[in-house]
Image 1 (cartoon, one colour):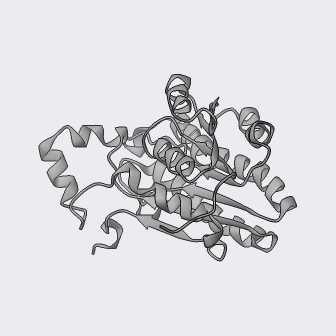
Image 2 (cartoon, one colour):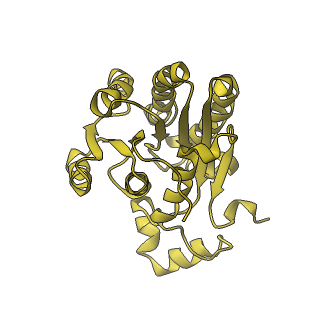
Length: 250
């Protein structure tokens, strides 16, 4: 087995209470990392924390609260003594016809999906640049690459997050800090519950995916661990698509 040498390193993972975020926390902890797990649902976070209390610190935070987001790097350093990795995973995806959506929906999506990751990345990168090493991993979406009807605000926000990844990586690579993005496709999460519960909808959805299945949450963990490790030190500004081939299909 390849040793990623992540023992003793510290990460912040947002949107950590369920789905992909929870899977990322578990994968990082299995590699020996300590993780500040961030979300709005403290009950679910506490359950996650109990699985590895010496390695997981549950922190309740609304990503629309800018002042709270700013404090997250300091919490990680005060709790575990350092900060090596930030995984910007928290996001919202309200569906609906764009022409009928209130402006508040757009503002909320941009606040959570773009502004919060930017604030957290900036505050964390200050520590990373000073130390000369660090990893920022932004969880985008294939919707940010191709765009998706009924998810205009979400697609726009994830497209912005991809460009943020590339621009920030170009700016801070010389300081030994790498910034990359992962663009997941359809995964078996609560966001896909309506599809998973309907045989007809599921059949149509899987028909669009060359692999003919959705991703399992555990499948994102190894990629996050790789990008968190020194093995990825020459990878920066990249977009790693994880979608069963859907975005490649003509």
